[in-house]
Image (cartoon, rainbow, N blue to C red; front, side, top):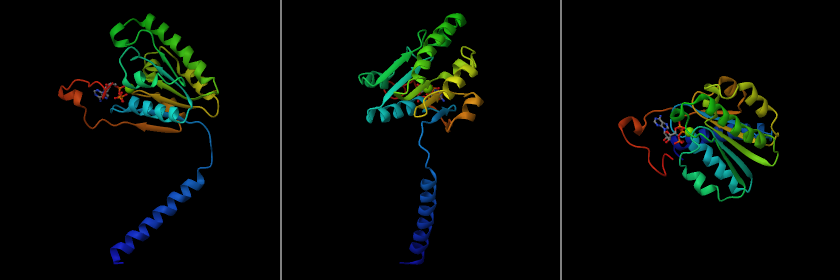
Length: 199
Ligand code: ATP
Ligand code: MG
């Protein structure tokens, strides 16, 4: 082995022992709270990816879609055939179209009641609260109510929260927080949202 190979091998050994140490330290087993936020694309896609993952092992999953409920969504079309998946959709669909605060608040509370049931059900392994950050931002839901439901959920249940501008109390209590950073988005160059790619 030449010097370069030896140095590489040593570096890999050091890396391996660091990773092994971390793996050994991670002994806790429980459900997680994940927040996918930021302005870049990929938050909802990542949530549906995780839904697929959980369904793949036969776990029960609940997805609550705030705001974009009436939009098409390819993952939902496909996965809803799985009897382990329950989807709850906010009735008015798209807030920026309706601009009716009272109706939106009512619709939000209705779908939140379904979310609360999922968050109280120990048989539901994963709950996705898609775009719930806007409900808090618009004041349709208050942070204390959401926090309480999250804190009291079954210990084995994982929750994923998606949406821009996540409330700092949510990111503070989350186990995993990912901020999608927008480097570029096609929409800003005038390219339309693409079926099967963007929704
Ligand atoms: P996706 O659903 O593709 O994972 P997202 O959940 O991260 O995106 P949202 O803010 O919920 O992003 O926006 C949903 C829709 O807007 C999708 O069609 C997505 O492609 C598009 N979109 C996402 N990020 C941006 C952006 N930075 N500029 C313009 N459009 C965006
Ligand atoms: Mg989204």
